[in-house]
Image 1 (cartoon, rainbow, N blue to C red):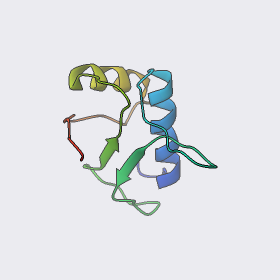
Image 2 (cartoon, rainbow, N blue to C red; image 1 turned 180 degrees about the vertical axis):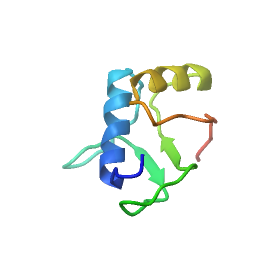
Image 3 (cartoon, rainbow, N blue to C red; image 1 turned 135 degrees about the horizontal axis):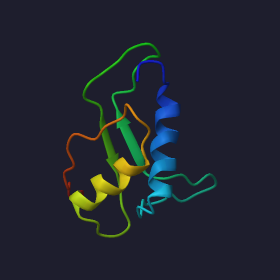
Length: 89
């Protein structure tokens, strides 16, 4: 996916997670949004084979279930290669 902006990619993951009923944590405050981070933010027209997306979840979900559920909601051309559980303090 070469011609998709960073913000569009963020929206894509937010909508896919919502459709897949993944329990993504929501920020607090005036303008709440899902806690999803995609690194690095690429300029339009640049492509990458390895972007890292971090989802902070409210509940437990196994890595295999997460990958299967999210992949079913992503459009063709966007693939998940690996899912890992990361513990944040």
